[in-house]
Image (tube, rainbow, N blue to C red; front, side, top):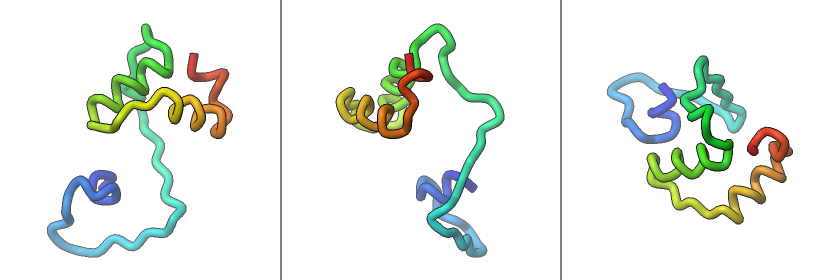
Length: 71
């Protein structure tokens, strides 16, 4: 379902109706506990082919008030 919502997969049948308020809570985060949050973000961005820009990531971290959680 999530892959269809983010357009990684095309639906084979049926319809999805959504709004701008879609949430998702994973049961078990797939993070490296031995790495910092920022190191995990860098790894995951590389894994999913997202350009890693530390300046943009740090800006988003501050905007989302995650500074205490990221280190």
